[in-house]
Amino acid sequence: MEDAEILRAARDCVLAHGVRRTTLTGIARRAGISRMTLYRRFPDVTSVVNALMTEEFCAILRGAQYDEGTGTARERLVTTAVEAVRQLQASPLLRRVLDTDAELLLPYLVERLGSTQRAAEAFLLGYVTEGHRDGSVRRSDPAVQTRALLLLVQSFVISA
Image 1 (cartoon, rainbow, N blue to C red):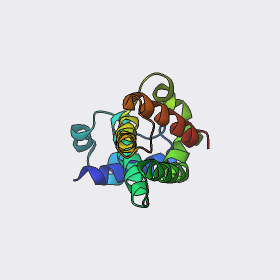
Image 2 (cartoon, helix red, strand yellow):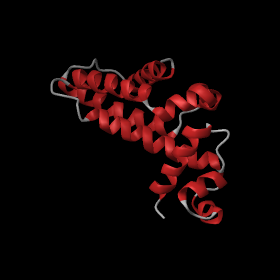
Image 3 (cartoon, rainbow, N blue to C red):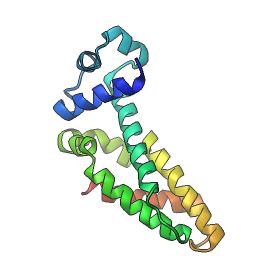
Image 4 (cartoon, rainbow, N blue to C red):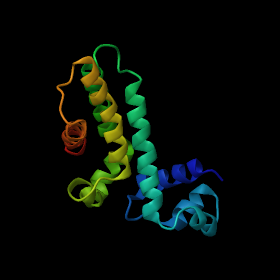
């Protein structure tokens, strides 16, 4: 059994029940595997859901990049960021989490970055660095610029 099949089953469970009511038993049943097989891959529901959200939201970031168009790095960054926000706001998985279990996102908003945020930061850093090279982004500390941009863009996603 591939992890992708497990994550698909987890997605179905979260969409049907929310994160807090999703169980490893339910995921295993939907995936057609035993709980022990699932436990060998993921120790708990949190780890499955984290993997699911990272996979799905990083796929959205990659997909947003396909329509970045041409132009300066800054222009492509804006186009891609707007598209990523649009797709994330429309994501059934994110909508379900925000509607039923929004408090689960709080640590990632006020305490630490999660794996999806780190991936988004790396994604943005590429555009900022390229913008420094082509002159379309003001030169400054790229890590600081990227973190500020991440926090700004994430607020649009969460507050939709």
